[in-house]
Length: 127
Image 1 (cartoon, rainbow, N blue to C red):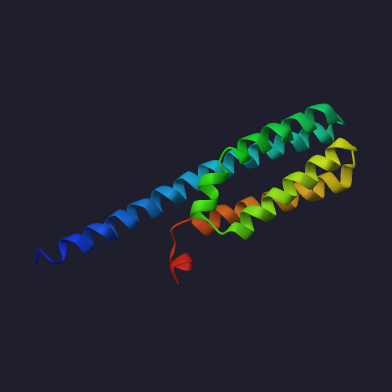
Image 2: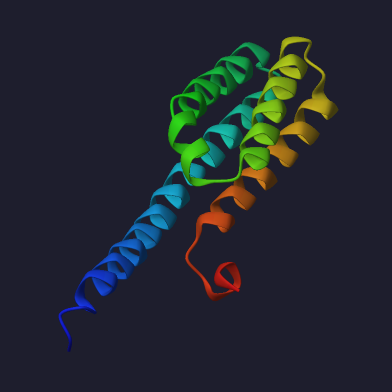
C-alpha cells in the first residue's frame, strides 16, 4: 500500500469509528430519556402529578445538559422540536392535563427515537 494512501485511509477509519461510537452514545442517551419519560407517565397514570412533573423536570435537566453535543452532531430541527415537546409536556403536567400530557409524551418519545435513528450508523442513513 502506498504511503500517500495512509493519511486519507486513517481519516476515513477515524470517521467510521466516530460514527459507530456516536450511534451507540445517542442510543444510550435516548434510551435513558425514554425511561425517564415512561416513569413520568406512570406517575401521571397514578395521578401523582407532583412526581410526574418532578420526573419530567429531571429528564429535561438531563436533556439540556447534552445540548451542546446534540447541536454539534445532529440536525438542529430535531433537537429544537424535542425541546418544544419537553416544554409543552411540562406545561401540561403543571395543569394536570392528563390526555394532552400523555399525547405530548408520546410525541416526545417518537422524536427521541427519531434522534437515535438519525445517528445510528446504517446503510439507510448513508444512502
